[in-house]
Length: 136
Image (cartoon, rainbow, N blue to C red):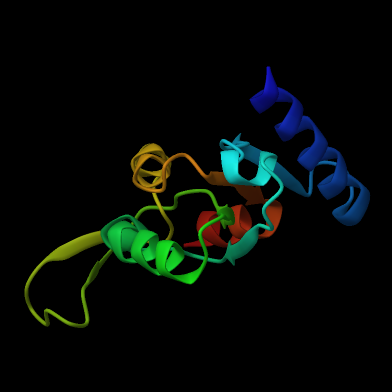
């Protein structure tokens, strides 16, 4: 119920900003508010936005950074829907091919778990990106 409510609230804000149907919420989750915040501690907010090709590979480092930065933290992530594109990784040269563009939707629960579910996320698709993908 909280997930549907959160997605509807975000969709309403996007519609008011960009016009109806310009940006669509594809997925979202409100996360779990940290107990320390309910106990009156201040919250260290980290807002992340953009294309996250390898976020799932760095989830432990992100968790370490957060834990060492403040005892009470919460992460809000905003990214575009997964778009498959194969490319060589720059740090491995001719090595591994990766599907990239953004964090695949099926990996966000893994990232959330690594962060103790203190991750709220919204994944969107905009009409401009889909037009670009159609043209190739």
